Image 1 (tube, helix red, strand yellow):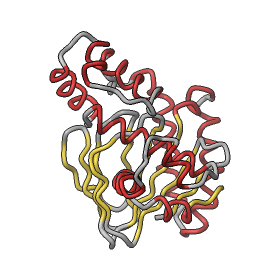
Image 2: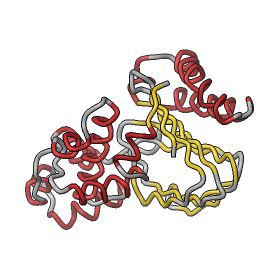
Image 3: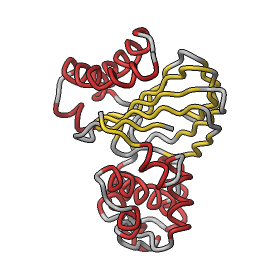
Length: 244
């Protein structure tokens, strides 16, 4: 897996190839993701449906949308991740120009066609134009719990504390949270911590500091959680990063 990350951290491109990976049910809280199958196929769980996506197919994953992706070693997948703030701070043309400029190096490295780039830009344009019409929105109480976890991810939460915030039983909260987010509150907390550690590694922090600062005090547990969510170990992730 190869990661290309813009210096402002607003745009990231991940190319997965020559490896069998099962990205289990997860979501992205701060990014829109546009993925295109470059070669072979991938099995996608998306909008509660299992789909086989083939070479040339493009799919969009919106923030908090639960999904999973399985790809084998004979396939190649490119995923473009764009931070929500980029859409909020720029009009459609500007977002598309920014993304287009960042794709140049990736497309040169992998000798990808103009048609593939156009598909990605069209998807980015669609996101920008339809944000106000999005149908995938978390219920207000679940969004409140998710925001609490995201904003205080190094804290330890009890289910009783979280459920009291929205005046439901902890069992009802678990069921409703998982139905909306795809993960239990605890699983979501681990995902947020891993993503924050990933960001810290991107910014040049030592692996041990990225782990401890985000609530991981056992290196084997950190490595296991990181690989399950990101798709590679922390050390391999650090090696495969490059700015663009």
